[in-house]
Image (tube, rainbow, N blue to C red; front, side, top):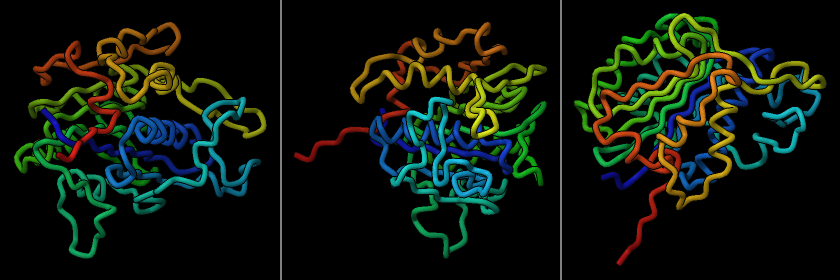
Length: 272
């Protein structure tokens, strides 16, 4: 079993027109915090700060709905890597724990072999690659090898790898380490699509697959018994407009036996 939960949440896109990728990531950030993972156990990587972009008609805010019901940015957000700090190298260093000595604890994934880790990534991608900042890209082999290093160094109990991008399923294709579950917004050869626009913000505010996940996640409480199998059953390709990918062959516990909160929630510990 696991005794602690961590989340690594990564938006790899810059530029105002990629607002939805920031919103995707902050939506997941809000969800894991609400369900009990503290900021000390979250590594948040945002490649751009749209909240402070001069084009933002609603300064210091990020919304994931045209109704603007909920400010995802708010006053209680801790960004660990921002702007040009969000690189392939830093992402791999976070996963593998191979940092320079001066890197503070707040930027480190301080996990062990009892840690369940949620890794969520979103941005622009293609077949077996995901772009970082429009300047470089990470490949499926890079991700697989980083997770293999994590396994060798006993840095996780189980990993849930989620990715929202075009041809997303191709990014988990090369993973070969045990106890890894993966879910993706689209199969190889398929695009992923935005959900809706906000005319005043002037761009799309969230992607369809992330929105689909949130429709379930927003209803959960900390002690919820919904399983990941239940979550995956809610995926509707006619609404998402792509076929979500799910990879379970490396996850022997089975999605029917894994609670959503095993990855999205905090572990309650009691001192005796």
